[in-house]
Amino acid sequence: DAKTTQPNSMESNEEEPVHLPCNHSTISGTDYIHWYRQLPSQGPEYVIHGLTSNVNNRMASLAIAEDRKSSTLILHRATLRDAAVYYCIPHGRGAQKLVFGQGTRLTINP
Amino acid sequence: GAVVSQHPSRVICKSGTSVKIECRSLDFQATTMFWYRQFPKQSLMLMATSNEGSKATYEQGVEKDKFLINHASLTLSTLTVTSAHPEDSSFYICSASSTANQPQHFGDGTRLSIL
Image 1 (cartoon, rainbow over the protein chains, first blue to last red):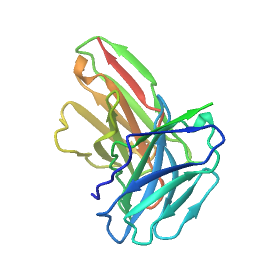
Image 2: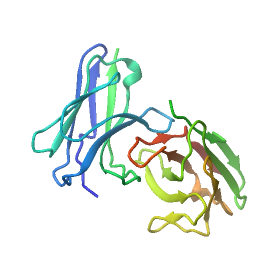
Image 3: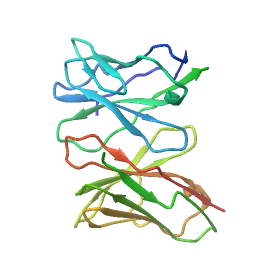
Image 4: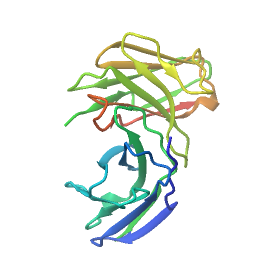
């Protein structure tokens, strides 16, 4: 499994953009980059995933470096409900199990 | 969207009791489900992969006789913590996806407290 490095914690203010970085320098060429988040006392929820191109959905955007050794999850306008632990997970096509690292604990200030 | 339901959400019981946790995929079939355990301030640790109609695959260090997994249908997997002790107190979470290339959907977890 590819190793990931994420900041232990980050802090931002409500209604401001948040950029959550992830390094995955040992990612294989066929691994997708998945992001999940876990709100307090809940199971994780899927946020977004991508392979090479940048991706957008209603929750966030995912910017993937050209060499695929890093990616950034972008929350365009953070709300208090975005306070969670965010996990970046390389995931092989067809592979099913997810291996969680320590993630980044995001705090949003009102 | 796809939903995974986990029950019960919380269990408090005495040491030596066996506890069963259910994980259901509500609107899709899942040939594979996953069971995780999460201790306070830590990340999720995969315990086992539950395979419909066959034996579960356990991660290294997880006792298969302690954590019994049954996946009798395409929408239900159960995890039974046998003869639970205080060190088994944890947050247990299941997940499933409709196909191998789809995102995982997680249950809301079961907080198990053994007195």
